[in-house]
Image (cartoon, rainbow, N blue to C red; front, side, top):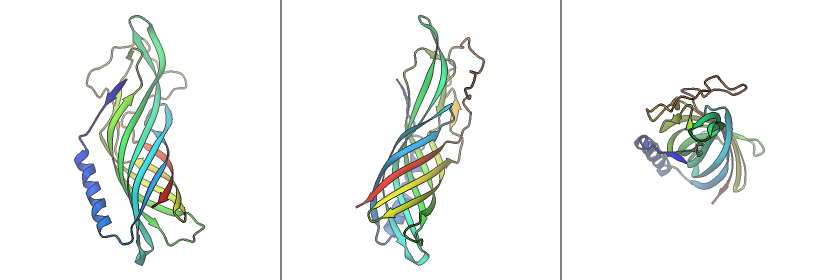
Length: 223
């Protein structure tokens, strides 16, 4: 198993956390929430895959304008897979999926329209800073015909809907990264050339500079 770690963007992510804390300090009647759910991510590879979402945060009412300030720290698994040729001096060439899981810490701040009838979903929108805690690839059965990796820091736009009933809530959210994340050969050492250079039929090639997007579905409880 190969794991790549990146902490170069920690200072920027910490800045976002500090801004969230300042907002919380001026908030009135903050309600804390814990959430859990699932995310389906496009990481620029052939196959999108789902991963875990966990979060803890709070909301506070900005009563004069009928808006809630929602802020949270979330852990998101962003996953995908790419059919890849691998070469080995013993077993020869083998085609299998190269699977990746990005473990991401995501401080997010959103504004939610609270002045809605109780039976209607509440629109929300905001921004996040995503810090890649680690980049984990599946075990490779040989040398890959190509190598890919992801940058350490991303910023994303969030658009979603939330439903609330007492202490319970549901959310559906679309998140779009604001900068290119997928980069070829991040180690600077090209893998050994494979004999299979032609694109695989029906398989999308990795997209250099892909902006990561994902759909996120969570359930929350206030405490």
